[in-house]
Length: 357
Image 1: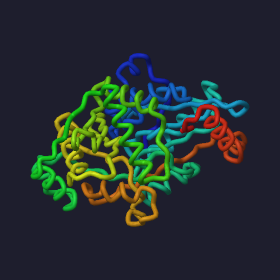
Image 2: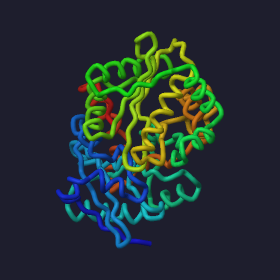
Image 3: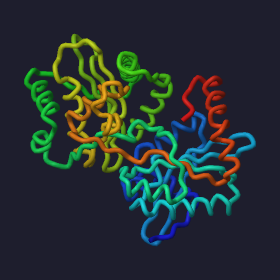
Image 4: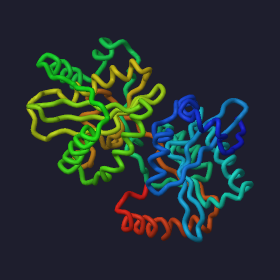
């Protein structure tokens, strides 16, 4: 089992951050990217760039950091650490603990969220590492993943029959997918479609437009983000924002008019995006969020409709282990869990009107 040393990334490493992250054992994640780090710096988080080194490999991980009076700092390894095997995570966290104490960084807890598939064995490894299971934060801790490495015709044949038939019908009926430039108008149209869909189909609330404008701008500025639209009677009826990051592509945002006439339009948007992502080197397409696999057919789940759409491409749902906390100061962590997190989340939301995480 490898041993790890934790350290801050050098300036040279930060300058090539995306290259290093996408070279991680699991290929990194868009939420570890330089673009996402730039977004979170304007939304209440400091960012740290951490390297976890062993004799076998180095894992580069974005850390989101918040400071709290009396308690100190919370570190959130969003979608990390990126490990070659779940069995390496305890050693990675031991290295982080040692680094925090050695450098006197005043971190009272580390929240992790590795892209490790949830099994009895993986959960046992994390539990034995004295990690505490906490509520999941990201929508794609359960998600539909599609292997897009096969040739296009073969890939279409391998899709779930619902998705394949919808794509073929949309093509036959002349539905056109338009790749849109990242202009102010494009972003506002995308946002309106998203808000309309969320209002109609979900109990959640969309972040403010400025958040999405910066998010989309950061990724498109790095040629990592792409807008796709379908129009009906010259009005945008379906929109999607898709990210290519290393060997992975992610359907990050989407929305549509609730009443429209072009059958299969949303499926064709995904099919066009999938083929574009293949050309950019992606081999996996993440539909970014479904109900957990054991609730996929539960109509009461808030993401039931989204799950049905996304699994019309990929027939199965992948559940990841989700969020765990590692207390570094047991006393301060106890204060955080009993009252601190709830109070600070409420205060932040009241003061800014924005989401805490």
